[in-house]
Amino acid sequence: MTGQGDSAEHEWVDDHAGPVVRPYAVTRGRARPVTGTFDLISLVMATRTDVASESGLGPEHLAIVGLCQRMQSVAEVAAHLDLPVGTVRVLLGDLVARSLVQVREPRATPAGLPDDSVFEAVINGLRAL
Image 1 (cartoon, helix red, strand yellow):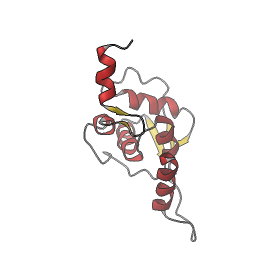
Image 2 (cartoon, one colour):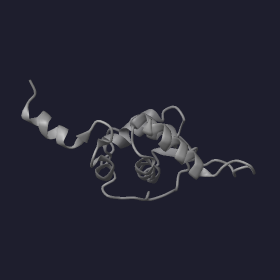
Image 3 (cartoon, rainbow, N blue to C red):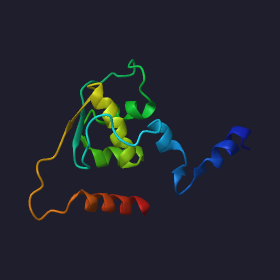
Image 4 (cartoon, rainbow, N blue to C red):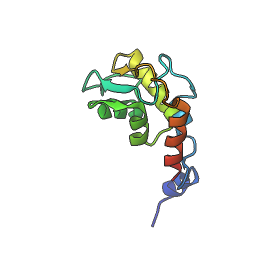
């Protein structure tokens, strides 16, 4: 038997789409990071291990720092946390501004490789499966 809290929670969650409001709420309505642009293949590495005492960080921020104790790409972070890449970019901007993560941008794209929009389309297609 489920409690009343369970039914209220299910009103905001769709099995296929996930939480309805979450990405907007996680970023407090921000669509752009405070710093950086963060390519999908940019590499993210935490600069500290213990950030629980930092004020103003949400659970997603803490999850990113925990996940990035080992170097991860922006796309991997988004996939592991099941968050849209745009949301992860905003959260990474917060963490970079506090010097809690370092981001290594990829080198210039060699001729003949597709641009980032192709990679984003592939990731979105894989997520849709």
